[in-house]
Length: 386
Image 1 (cartoon, helix red, strand yellow):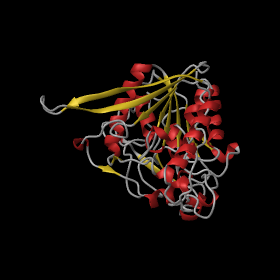
Image 2: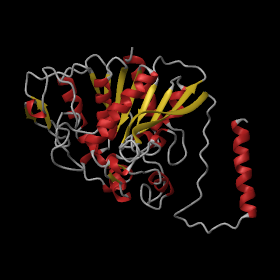
Image 3: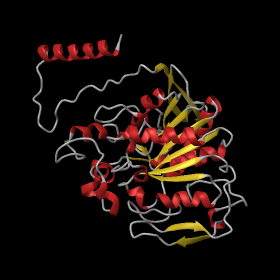
Image 4: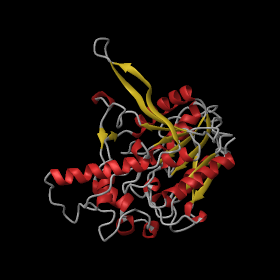
């Protein structure tokens, strides 16, 4: 069946249903949205598998925990030497990469068109990767939190850069708010996730390492909460990670800011141990000093006091931290990049506005110019990954 034929079939099915079935009244707040169908002519095959995990519990009542669901897309012509592994952030699943809440093409299809094999995961204990009560408490982002942090930040965000936000899809005065069909479609995708950042990182490091053991060398693409996973998986499998693209990774080192306060990420870019040289027995071995902010709009950064301990397993792996113009991450992502660089990591820091990509918030893969950002990522891989 061709794409044109499929679209016609969808239209006819909708038309017949409209003729034969009484329809509930539509309100102006809930207009009918088109069924998103994207051209997948570049796709040769797709499939899924599970990897990682272990049995837990007594012998008569064991369950598997820690495994991840992995979806794989294979292009008709593989033109990129290494696959991409796309790892979503908090409250999200692999649907982040499959399309946008207003029905446009997502990053998975775009990267297949560029010739990448694409792997998308649901984090352990998330989405299609089973959670059990013994795995620990979960949390759910409320709709008001997402409005303030992701979708209506130009009005609700309380950090200096928020006013520059222009790229969330939708129209009208309710754009980015509950009742707007695009926001509602986005919020419908949100799921419960583990409350413990440390446990989340431990499980994702183990599952990510198991995935690379199965598929071989790859480039990791992480977003938000998943940022530390990139450093941790590379620490565990440095010979299998060919590059890391960290989109607004969880940070900054050692503390929370903007959306929370207090100590966090005791190992610098992570909440759980990384390999340092000289060796670090506990976070207390890291001697820190505060570096002053260079602008009123930026956070000050905790850095190591020289001579800085290095992150030897990350040395030599090309990495990039990408930050948007209007996100709350614009306040502090430079701290994460600077800390990694001080520790010997070959990391580049890119602010999207410096590349002419303006107005983005945190959910860059879903916003109106999402493919411009994907193109930048592809160009970075081609230039830096060998």
